[in-house]
Length: 366
Ligand code: KG4
Ligand code: ZN
Image (cartoon, rainbow, N blue to C red; front, side):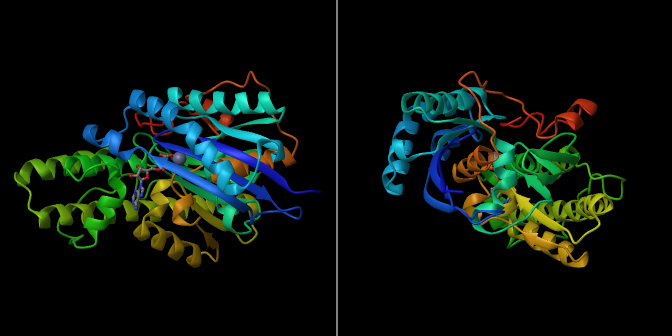
């Protein structure tokens, strides 16, 4: 087996990203060479609206993507002829942005006669821990981002089983809405986490939705409503009020995650028996309180705990290139008719059986 060099493109939300990743000849289950990793954030363009505006995102991708690709190729020291394939996110995500990235990948694939790999963004997150280290299949993944909140059994490349997901908001969305309510700016997750550090997590008693229930589904809408009520009751908010609200919110989230993750590990164990691996991915996996909680839970059950480095938790193109490279090696490629898909569940069967459990129904990436 020779090396596999892939250009990856990610445009499904508010990051315009391009990266070149090379799998070493002896790659088995992790440890890729990331030759370049360009991420152009659009936060400034969306900040006035306190959330991602799809039309603004799509236009920004059109303006930024060519430059991001050129920079990724230049800093990797790779020419288009040297590539083994081109991978792009083909969904799920904001459809205008997805189309921009996918069409760019198709044009490069056609012009340079290279295979195209249409990657599911969620598969990118699912495989992201394998960029930095060896993580063998199967593993239990908690995917928590702005548009998604689900437990997935990553059984093999292309074989995913969904154990549970949110029945309303995604967790990142809950963080972003909390930030919006407290006027902290966008994206909210890091701001809420920072303020929570100086807050009293016991001052407000907020609900822990789904705690103690069977299964491992999530719900965050009630938590948001409780916060809205507290804010209305307080009236004008001091900095300390905001910090205490953030700390109380984050503590409620951590309690819910602990409860749901215990059930998910139990379900995963019953299938696999052997020593398990718990992996956290997606933007919210950057949160240190949540990481700490998951680490503790994994230790309780003698699981290994793995989370990608912070830069590969949030949206990036290296994870898309990696998924593309793994798929190409396994013989999965796509033709130029591959569609851009606003919705694309990783576990299609679970999604069909429980259509109400959609990834972040109202989220930017739903
Ligand atoms: O994976 P990602 O970059 O995009 C999606 O696929 O959605 O995740 C972005 C989400 C946002 O909702 C953001 O607020 C959240 O991840 N996030 C965090 C933190 N950093 C990013 N949430 C909580 N704590 C953080 N430190
Ligand atoms: Zn994402």
